[in-house]
Amino acid sequence: MHLRLISWFFIILNFMEYIGSQNASRGRRQRRMHPNVSQGCQGGCATCSDYNGCLSCKPRLFFVLERIGMKQIGVCLSSCPSGYYGTRYPDINKCT
Image 1: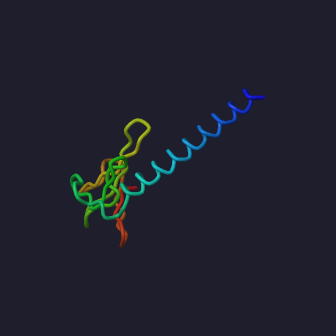
Image 2 (image 1 turned 60 degrees about the vertical axis):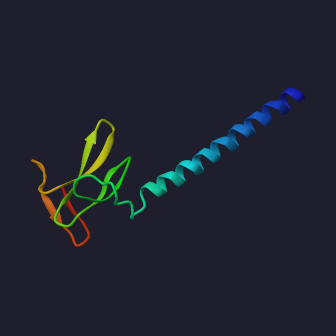
Image 3 (image 1 turned 120 degrees about the horizontal axis):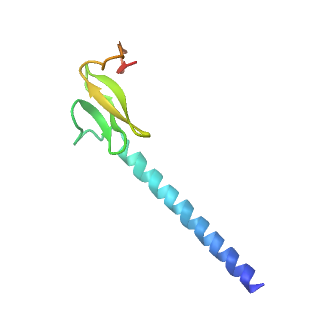
């Protein structure tokens, strides 16, 4: 009986730690992707994220997703790479 109670205690404790870590990582992710994170961005990025690269580009630049292994990172370029064509929209210019 005592062994069963101790087992349940550890299961509940691990579950609570898991939920806490999920909430903490979600908060960090939302702060990083906040639209006002424009300081420190590389190249032509208007907004960026540590994990995703560029989130939006400065005017007249094209947004492209570059694949690095399993990860995709946003990049802003003045023209689209070979095999892509540029599409301009009022809110974003992207390579398709």
